[in-house]
Image 1 (cartoon, rainbow over the protein chains, first blue to last red):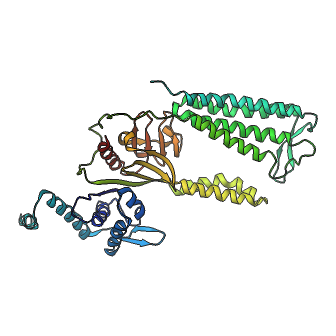
Image 2 (image 1 turned 135 degrees about the vertical axis):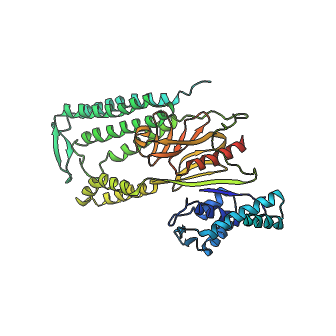
Length: 118
Length: 319
């Protein structure tokens, strides 16, 4: 699976790591029962702190997306990440993009509202 | 640029070694000819008693022929394969020559009076195994090719290979697995291990340990972790690295379709006739990494195009 984090982004690193997992689930490439790489391995390949990845995994567990079991690592616990998780992912990406182009939350809200009007 | 001849030299050395081992064994056997019984025992049953005999001369010729022909067949195969595959094949052929010579002639020589012919372990077992390992490792090291130095700016990556559109500050990585299907592999392992189980049941309890050790080794190497990150491509099982390709040695990455039997002659960590290295666990989609000055590396993973895109993007940053 693809992992990408941008340390220069104002989105917290652990949020970005969690978004990687959510995106895989939303696209159907991670299914129920699939095992995620260990937090140590992810921390290694992304060159981020182990606690950052653990925090990301814990937030995914709190959302009910994965199970964290001692010795078994992180296992995907739902076959459907749900619209909520998908929306979160899209919004996280949208906000990151908005920051990049300098759009304010008000600009973004206006754009979203006008999209609803169509 | 001069071609590295060492793989070929190692292969030739292993080809010379086989008849030399056979000749030494024959010499030793004839040196003690008056001491060993004629006919001599050439096969032993599970109870440790001989159950097949041959006249002395015929037994020596059989041992010499087997010791020579089987390694030479491997050398012939090595001669047909890519240069970089010759070192590993030289190691297998040379090791096999020493092993066969030790086992076959050791069994003959052990029938001198005063020796316990089938005491376990036979007195020739340890020297044979040690020599086999030394010769195999020696030939393998001799036959290793040194990849050409990567100097200066390298050629830009081909534009048509997959690439990711991300900001240069984004850290990228890709993780995946290549796993043999557990069911068929386990079934095959059980069939292969049946003779071991039979021997173990016949009263050689230590064989259980051997079977368990082989089973554990298989379980550990059944599946490989594939990672792409800022240090390049890594294919490894349980800490054992099958392949490592640093980013500066990646010419480009892409996807291909592999047929394990036709292209690699089987499954697992393989060397193709054309020198390609592959961790091949199934037919179909695979990541292929073209290396600078070395044969390609192939790994059967799902979403290989994504892995290739990550590798290309990271490699382009190094360039």
